Length: 506
Image 1 (cartoon, rainbow, N blue to C red):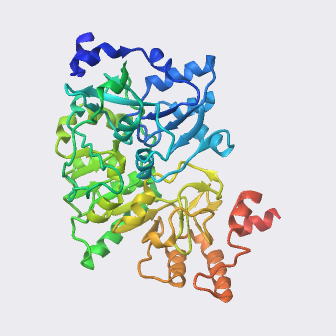
Image 2: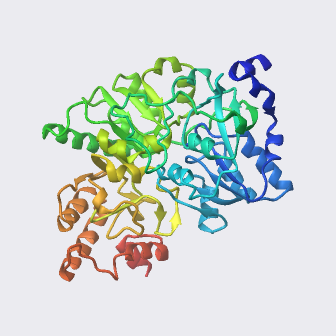
Image 3: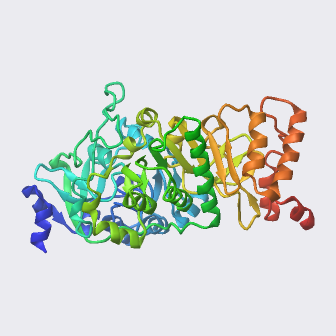
């Protein structure tokens, strides 16, 4: 075992810094700030956070935790239960942590995922005491080779006072060579990011680190947590078909070719299912410039549909993880993993002209989108990278099922209860009933299109009634202010947005 470990630590002096997770957490004290690797359940630090949770049971403490995105291994859940989090950013996706956030037992900063690195670099956020990052190996010249995600690891390592490396023996050595780490430099001093094509490499294969900052190396052997996506259903298949129809219309109009443009797709079951719609389409030789590479992406690569994919992490189901990680060599030259500030950078998104596909919680009749807050106040997961892409993509598409909670909630409402993406950043809305192309339309042109093409049939007439009443009030964007959020209030009081059920319950 020792030989296998030393094979992964190329820098000989670092072999003397192997410590247990318990020793590593003895260095972490109350009030510190930690930067953890991990992006959407992939490449996250595992052993040290778990040991810190155990330590907190005997010695209560609170720390601020910065990550790339959500963590696996139930770490967010267990940290929340242990009460060790004072502040968490920039994204999470755990039910227990979500409850603690909404009960204000811990602070949460919901950030655009491209912004965290800038705030760390410019010393706006509290300084990071320890960066704790997972690695598959450490090179002879001391570069950290990440595992299945890059996230914010590179900026954490660069700015942290000390670094703890989790050398994960369960992660495949074949991950060496899949990463492209580029440091943009300080604002006001940096040059343009020299990335002009999806498959270009502009940085190093690992994260450069000052060896003197490495406090210890913890040996682990634990795979990533599998993704929680569910297979496509009838509704998500219908959404995918409408997306394909829209893209075909763009090709017919001469705005796209059958190679389309580089695609970005958000995380989750709906986005993953929508990508599966491309498998049986006529589109080919596709490129992807995205954050998370999910199951569908690897099926598209295997089918020859996707030529090259650039992402920030690989987040896979258990069966797909086994298939991919035992055959990683087949994907050499077909994908690359970058820091999230590069995968989500506005400069590159605008330059490459992406087609951006993300998921909405709700949208209103004018095209504003809420992707974070249930009923306007209850945090779900966070804005993630959707805002990075929505503002700057060539085409910004939001997908959602037309209703939720067995039809008690309409996903198309008079006015969203929280605005993450304004009408100015939303080009197309798609539900299982159709798509609304909002480009070039005034607000009063948008509303009828969204109602007729995207709303659930049960909610179309109430939406028409609201819009017609609003038109009588006048204005560029007509609203009946005293009724704009009445659907959400109705749901809170009676458990449904349906007018007829509401009247019965009254």
